[in-house]
Image 1 (cartoon, helix red, strand yellow):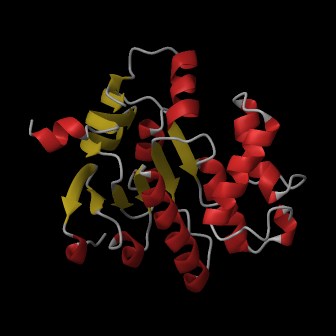
Image 2 (tube, helix red, strand yellow):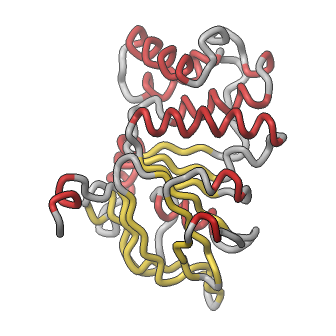
Amino acid sequence: MNNDAQANPPVLRLEGVARRYGDLVVVEQINLSLRPGETAALLGPSGSGKSSLLHIAGLLEAASEGEVHIMGRATSPLNDAERTRIRRATLGFVYQFHHLLPEFSALGNVALPQLIAGVKKKDAEKEAARLLTLMGLGERLQHQPGQLSGGEQQRTAIARALANNPKILLADEPTGNLDPKTSDVVFDALLNLVRKEGLAALIATHDQRLAKRMDRVFVIREQRLVEVKKQMAQT
């Protein structure tokens, strides 16, 4: 291992991961490492296993074989409570649909995960305001989701995913429900915030334009994960 690798070890590592449902093989022999500050696109047609792979990486679903390492720690020996603690402390999730709580403001939605984690309300709201401002929503803090555009709602959801200072962001088609112009705005904000916070990010997308803006591009082909050059990325 060279000095750079020692100084910047992977925060997420999948080693020989497979997922099967009976005789149905979803993915197999998946190997992937991501270091702090790296962004990686995950491409593949619908049904190729992108969501399953993200769920395995996020400890939401158990691998049929192989190992998921989070911050250098093997997770297969852990019980459910320990896996939940790792998810809360280390992982942030963004989905295609924002799932914001309609009765809370943007500020309240982003502060809520921190309050659940035991952060004082004043500190939680300060951090929520910081993240929302970085996402370009500094003037919309007190607006409820119904008062926000689709792009603003998704940017709020991204800020919420980062509220507890995770080390890894997992995103499943985070702009898939948006028109191309709004998608570009949201994706710009997402990449800027991820890089500013120094996260490792694995982002599933159908949009090859967006994929080429990330540091690395992976494609699921015939249940295997293949890293490709960005200019050649295709499903």
